Image (cartoon, rainbow, N blue to C red; front, top):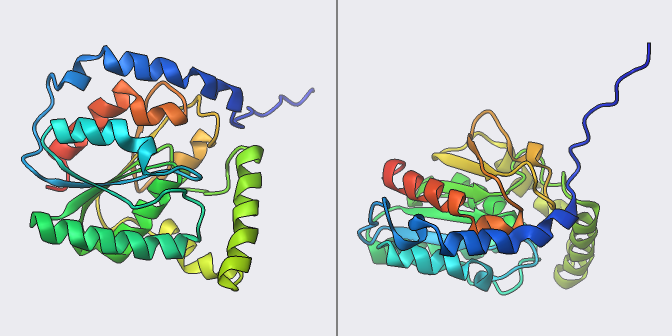
Length: 238
């Protein structure tokens, strides 16, 4: 008997060319105008961009959250490629300042690698974090990604080895905390048509997982994602 081929879940990067459709859809969606969205009343939200991206990649999401009444803060990342441990320390300082200024625990929303960083920050500072919302983040396996993206990861690793004069083994504590059971409510929002991250890598039994239709890049401007974010911020970890 002929053996059936196993399903191929590898990401197809060409799909990312459709991300513009999500942005157009968002601009014309009632959620972008705040219809049915509970106001944040100044509750703090820290935004963390993805690999090789910066704070500006989440500017649409940040502006929307501000209009919805949340107090947002940027991660202070211009180009997300440094060692994870270094970025986690930086985010922890940002988080402390945000919580002190607002008087309450902060939610962290991270896109792609930003979701991995958010998860580890919450693991080390659960007293400061209300919840984590990860968008297209490979929380189960951070290396289950498109080969082109993996090539970028390897280049960043080489750069960091020479820059910090330490090997990639410095990242082992980060990977251990990433794999640990979450200490705060953590949501993973994913799409099966992700062209960068294998959607299976976004699924874990100890997370609240939600599927939307869209692309990896487009998750930051996806109306379905915005509805889920609005619901989670209103209902979880307050």
